[in-house]
Image (cartoon, rainbow over all chains, first blue to last red; front, side, top):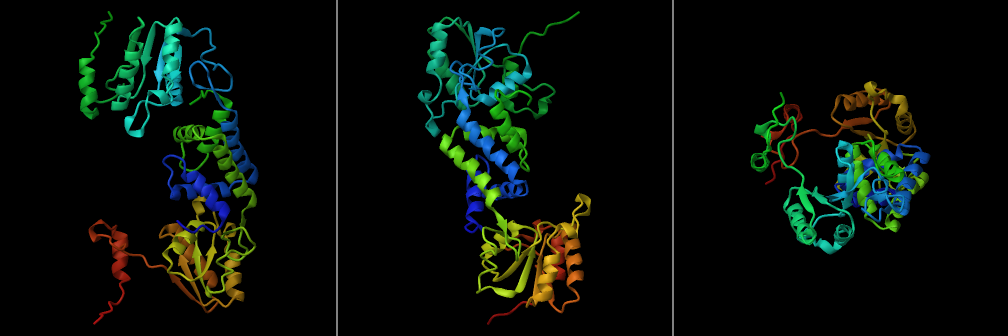
Length: 204
Length: 204
């Protein structure tokens, strides 16, 4: 789309088109929707973006997003400091917190090992995890990483690094989703759900 | 998603989620991608949005987006002022300009008649079109509106309004797209392409 009637429009479309998964056609649609708002609303939107990046910080303990030096999860004394759940990014923290099933700490890697994209352990928050385990009262590290080649590689790398310390290392269960029909599950998941079957507790 | 770790993140996600077709999950993904940029880049993005809405204006002749009183198309003396192409919005102007097949003027309605959404002729730039035809040297108005109930209603309304003036009114051709297979075309389009068939010019 070489021609847009004004530089202002062109600039805004270019900015939106740089977002992941947003093409120029969608970017133009989004920009036109902003034109339909009031200047005050557009200003509020623009400022939310500027303020976000300017003022955001990361928790020095778990690397989660935080406005303070230590995030609200790490500074919560009711949470188990000996249990660490390793995740790829902040979205996973949000997803797990929503389940209300987990009362330990987190460790946000900021990505996973991906040789094709040139992401190695040194670009991720791996050293701080090892140091945390070395110095802390950690008894278990749960790997909550994607069930992909990259996720498995990352689990393998981290478990090797953490092996010297006598802690428990676990991975989250994979299997048929609750409410899921067996016939619609993919073979790999179904197969793994049979291998990793758990004893049935008969309640009388 | 009730819990996001900070107010800053929550604000930014809410702003993105207000855009058309962007849900909260996508909004979060977009916001996290902005966090990976430099503060300068985020500021540039935010300012592009603010500046866009603050400084944009509409051409007083055709209602296209413009930074000047009269847009670059309307002020181009090489373009045919007696030919007006009526379109729904700015995206259509961009699409038609890309074809490089049209050298007339435009008239941007800013929407089409849609009684269900409460959009009538008075909310659209219809009066200025009639006035343009009344006073100008217009000899033809091309209706380039969507082939929908709403588009057809708008064409009907406008053609009624323009009928008193002895000008030609035309609609863009509908038919099988170039390179399109007949078997994949919908019935309505295929049917119309037969009814509106054009004489074949045999070149020897």
